[in-house]
Length: 108
Image (cartoon, rainbow, N blue to C red; front, side, top):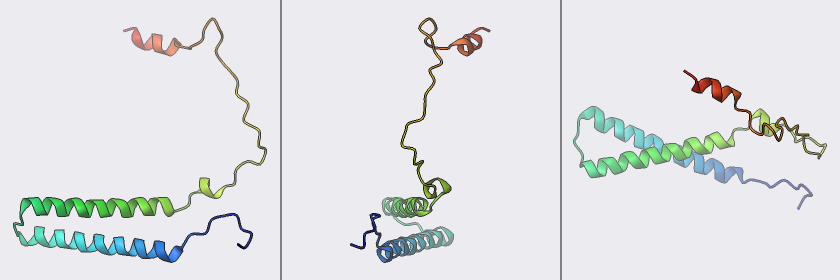
């Protein structure tokens, strides 16, 4: 322990997983392209399963890459005040739910 409370990720394993998924997706897309361009007629069951596998790999790869890119919201630190934001109640006991806009839309 070096005193850093943040968990450490194993970047080399993540890189290997992403590279393997990218290679599998590339092979799958190239194979599908070859079959469609040459006009080969594979067994429909096997072809459907292969298309599903390639789509799954592409989905997993896209999901992993979408989650790993930091955004400005994740880079920003949380407010240090610690107190919750003050909430102002706009409704009254006589008019608990404001429906004025809804009434106008119902009238034709």
